[in-house]
Image (cartoon, rainbow, N blue to C red; front, side, top):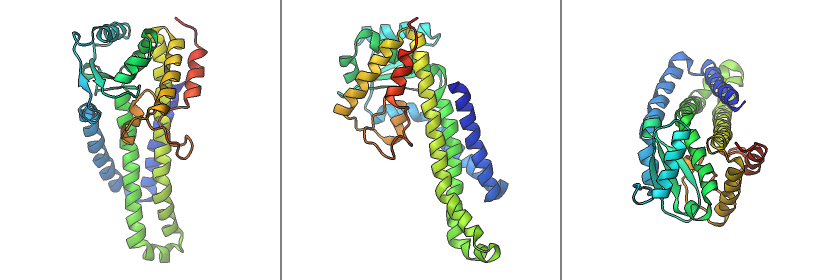
Length: 282
């Protein structure tokens, strides 16, 4: 169901792009904006693993340094039919984890020092399995496609904004005010709509990663317990996270509420826990 939802949301982003293209800029403007957004976002997709790992000062750990963690990741990767990912540890007490890498052969699983302290073995297996599911589902690629479409929409909206400023008078005369109002509305509402759809895609991928993580580990209740612990601890020990990377973490590192949950990259933690606890252990 969430896979279908992701496809529909990507279709909605594409449809929004086509609608804006029809209203403003013409085919050539849409193509230019799309190519520019694609270059930017897929460049980020290709190098994002190095950037985000450096951002959080994550360091690779060898099998001799963290034998239990390596053995756990290796065993779960075999269950998931994935190559062994690189293992990184992020300094800090806030418990969290994320996966990155452009494909299965360049994947990274990163966990904080804090998560290794507060979770038991079964709970940590659930978390690692969740991150391996992100790798298996190619969520970095899906996120980059969504970012490319959303980025194109934002660029077209900026073009509309400048058109309203510099070309608004003549258009207003020709169309009785409808043209300038339409441009202003599109410049304001299109980026908001694109952001909401992009966040909804991210939330759908989190539900899929929870279900996949429960399947790989065979322990949905333990993954639910891990999410509960991580959510509670993250509120007590907030992480200094960059909002642009918040969607990568298993629980949202940004604890401040803004516009309720409209722009949250994660589904409500209570809903995720309820879904996991409704599953049967494998």
